Image (cartoon, rainbow, N blue to C red; front, side, top):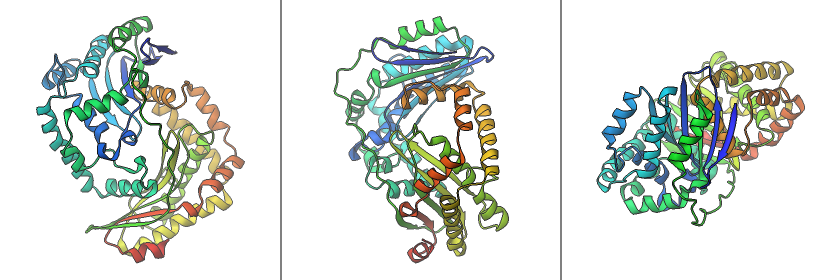
Length: 417
């Protein structure tokens, strides 16, 4: 059963009771991510996420780790381009302790200058890990190319130079602007007593007052850029990203685009996987995925291949994109993909963690809850005509962007394009 409660200070609680489970997951979502940073703040959202676990006024970092371990639970966080999330998953009998711990982290983290200095090195090593992982790196390079100077084009982890110079007062000022109660959603899914949950949430999170500070600058929608970008690097493979314009997370055509993505490269039965890997053996890894934000998005194909096969792989990808734009898909593909999507959706929502994620995203993107039955109805409602229209609109090669990483030349990519 779904419920929504807005606290006096503006924090929104969205919850779904699932009595068949023994676990409960609580997520605290802040409507701030890397896109909300100024260039001189690149990486602040992610760095703040790290600092929440480095000690509060009443708990050391070790105390926090021992407490969640003693509950047999999981406490973690993640940062995206639009949100920062802190979550805890425990057995239902430990919900009160878990919420008290999450509340302490959120309200009383110390941001000790000594811990900030230590964490700088940890985050810088994390940035360098991405530099050493070509699959991650080419996707960061591609996002930067496609989004251009827009904040969505910057890496979530930030830049070494910015992280190396960050100060405590910088982080606290950023939080005062972006961590206002009215920008927070608490999502709870699993086994719990509704009345008791609401009492605890009010006790733990209604203490901070609604912020009267001016809101952060309004987000500007991105423009999608095409073209070719290359970064030479001595690797065994060439790593490629080929991108096109997508749509926003709440767009009316999102389910039609999910269908197109699945058929293009979103599964092992997809056209690209079958054509490029299974039939021709040109790549071990090839897949497509969607990146959807509150005001725009992209469709991206990733492939890793040998240098001499770059032109063939790019040509095959472009052929499939053109084919889908001009001819659409078959009725059999639409039927199979709908069945696959419904099965994947139902399986993905079997855990309290996945249900918590869905609750929060529904609230932050649309402000309304969408039930599983409603989602299945929306998948069933996708038509051949809608899919063909969306393919024709989005799979337009004028927006085509190709990013290459590895031992190849600019001429190879330009010939491929």
